[in-house]
Image 1 (cartoon, helix red, strand yellow):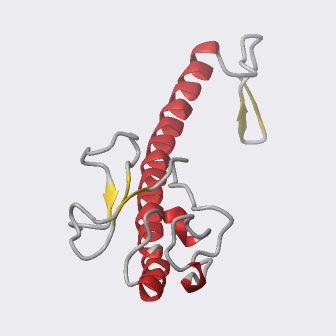
Image 2 (cartoon, helix red, strand yellow):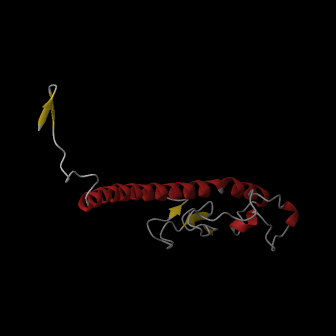
Image 3 (tube, helix red, strand yellow):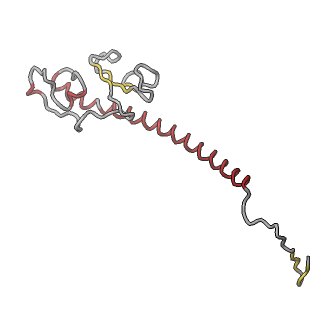
Amino acid sequence: MRQTKGFVRKKLSRTTRKGLTLIEVLIVLTILLIIASLAVTNLIAVQRRAYINAARTQIKAFEQPLHAYYLDFNEYPPSLDALITPPADLADPTKWNGPYLDAQAVPLDPWGREYQYLYPGQYNTDKPDIWSMGPDGVDGTEDDITNWGQ
């Protein structure tokens, strides 16, 4: 070492590093992967909740068109499709004041499957049962989204 005007200067050796070692790079990549996997896991949970809320909202949105159909015919339609096109077996087709639903077709649930519809309802005695089979796509499981018991 040599001293110049009060400063100590170290002599640089030829072994001075100019980058990261392979192990350091692997450690950084591992940390980044852990952080990314935590973010993706949280994103999947948020998306699942959003889909469930969307299904609940759509099921609730069927109530007004169903009620309008009920007012015209004094009974609920045989299917959700009857909210868009009149059923072929209507006793008086002139009563049909539809379409009752503003869509070209009955919307699918957030998982791309048809909403289930049953009238007369098994769970609702005074209105139809409407439900989505939920994320698992299996009817009658605990993840079904329904218009009863919630």
